[in-house]
Image (cartoon, rainbow, N blue to C red):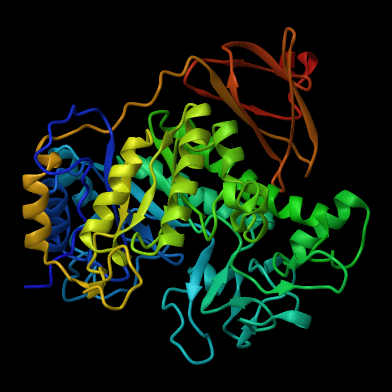
Length: 522
């Protein structure tokens, strides 16, 4: 029997203490690097673990690096052996995701498709095997296998660090560590990824799309003498060309150029907006969430969110996403050691900021807890503080066996005995005796009396006026010409000269330029 998962225990109050059960997320990330999700037995084991611990949601990694753990996909099936229980000819005999959805839904557990958006390959193409399927995005738009080198020009989708300072990168600044990332500033790369995720929403009865690595990679930091530091990333040729066209400049922008910083944040935000509206247009009830960056000190200790690494290192402005409404659940990865005093303070700083930002925007705050780096006592404390802060539940990384062998609790004093690693059985027993004895349902999304619009115009960066009576919104198109607006009261609108109607809870569609009255009559 395969090693079962070490489940981090979600506990909201001390064992045996009475509590009022309210709707809240009791969720787990299911990552597929260390957690097998190949066979029916694997799927059943994951669902059983969730049910036994009274969890109500699984965020299951079904897109890892430009591949899929499901059969009805716009991308190749993963090459991990055994996925789908292939027959003698190699043809899968079942669909892991479809089977998981059926098993989980039958037992009251939501399934959110956890997808890696930015990173599409983790390999060294000159020493490691390349993807076998020639359709893989890495072989189509990053690596020219015929000539054994990266593509150039418009076909190259990878982001890049400039070679003059490329520590931690390789292949002329295009591979970051072991990973290759697409650049969301390349319109074709963004469009491809949106299409992959929209196809997934159409094909499967998933409860949500969960975006991870929705950012730029960790990149070299430039320290120009007498100037602020800059981040050396985002220099995909096509994205740079678009930037120069907008601002009338030439060459490569400096890594600390404020406009270049804003540009990179804009590319990520535009992508999130387009995923949100495209998915909601297919299924209005689907929930869009993201695993968000919360590295190091929180906003209070940093002097504001704009001083954090989330904002100025990987260009992920997730509070703005909450305010605009382009994510429904915010799950910052608060991976902090409870037994380290500094990290405990960081956890509480980020947690307070998350709850405030999400609730002011009418969205759900679901902090991510790093169970792999805490003993069970630490996970219990962090989950309890999350609930006391007003969070809408928690999500634990991870359902796979990644808990440490020993963890020193609440002290760096070597004289304090470390806590031993717990088995699954111990986790389940503690949970069954604690406050999770009573089940809870996930929160229902708030009633939305407004609607949205997703449109397209033939220009990059065009200004679009959306109007209805005295209401006026000014938005801009992205690199593919797409634009969108949320929280529009129902009624008749115009986008520039094109009429459309907004309905509550729905996404309207309008394409510019629209036909004139004379053209319609012909």
